[in-house]
Length: 190
Image (cartoon, rainbow, N blue to C red; front, side, top):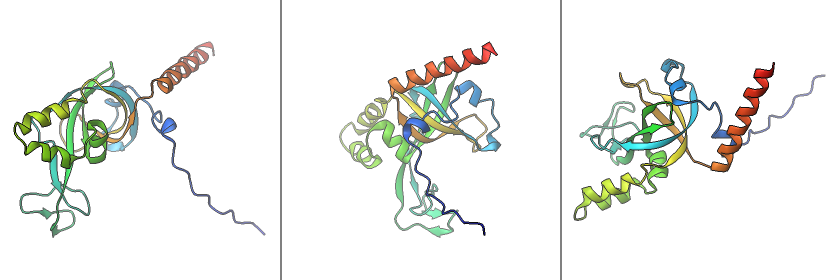
């Protein structure tokens, strides 16, 4: 008689592993097919923020889809009574191999900016609010993060969508780089 093994719940991947899974340079990611829906991680610096685009949007409270002025959600086919305001921040990231626009939604934008969207909206209502918001958004320029990304299929231009953001751990990055060099050296010997 065959015994049945109980399925063990899988533990969440620790950030120390997740931030290096399928690590690629931006130039290599850009060569991939967006239709494959593959995710990658990259370590890159935020070089600018596109403040010509709106940095927040009203969304359906159920599915997070952007809704129009009538508060109608096309995905859920309902009028949303209590729309939720969410971040949609477009930044440029650079890892030395390429510079690419990256869309940061709600939680990931909040991690990068360090403030919930509602605090920035409150700040915007104050005197010189738009300038204060621009300054607050600008604090992320020059910061480096490890990003889990996928290629966007929503526009004609190449853009990445951020799925997860990790604070850069320079000690782990150094260990990763050293291991990559060792692996490359052992491949060359063969």
